[in-house]
Length: 362
Ligand SMILES: *[C@@H]1O[C@H](CO)[C@@H](O)[C@H](O)[C@H]1NC(C)=O
Image 1 (cartoon, rainbow, N blue to C red):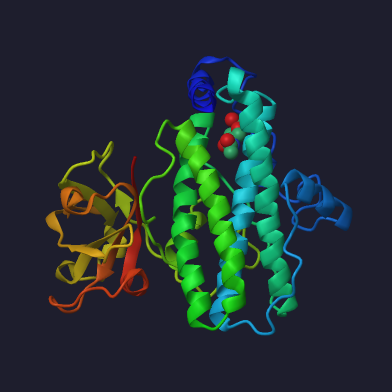
Image 2: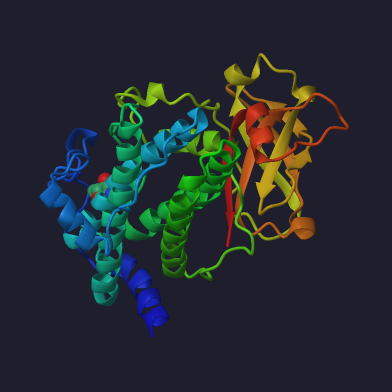
């Protein structure tokens, strides 16, 4: 039974003693690219191997005749994200292959390595597909950055992968909506197929964490700016050669202060930096929660505390009413009229100042 093998593997990760850890030998100086196969610019021979390792080929049909401005931004964001994912999963496979301390799964090693090696090749193909389309529409392909991942063992790596993949799954909904709204119909199928691929990966990450594979009936939606902001926290400042060609907003940080959040209605604690907060009137700010395909939930700040360097506040988390399992995106947005609602996730993003705060309930 796979499930029991994987659970055993997950447990063993903390028990088996592997090679000494601590040295970042895969990414000295936080440099990940080019990979041994030349990626992100592999030769045509290397691409043939990537296709075999990824268990399928790049789409071989023609690109649409036109691509909207929003469509270009979609592909740029996808490329930026896929580069980061390739860096992460390639290093994870490296750590597992060398059985570093915290990365020796014992019995489950072979299955996990095979699964993640396919993920590496599949993410490489997602990048190649996006950057090739950009090039054909005479837009500079997105170049890789330097990265730093806050993980030192298999469990924390998979938990992080589960979180960023959830955010990607929400963001690709936005990408598809924007393609459709801007008449880029012919790209919707390919992106939908990638949503399925990323969701299959998410099922593995959840299983390994002993979560049920399918999180929610309708996965939480996101907007491009939330993903754009979140993935930059894994990139070294000023290390992305052409991130500035992507015209998306980067939000100021919102910290979820509450830990070990339970599946119940409660107040959650958040914080924002005092320096960033100074220019806004607290009365005009609202904490917005995005979960599933529901309308954004708007909550007022409570118990606002001004500390030396940060502003701490609470806001209601109405779990009982909305059954907010899976991913919840929190954002602090500007709120003009008491009666208005946010029209949807994109409307929240348009008015967001601080975010995203990521809340994950199993
Ligand atoms: C791989 O291991 C190194 C050394 O422990 C660590 O710094 C790095 O974050 C790990 N990367 C992943 C993706 O697990």
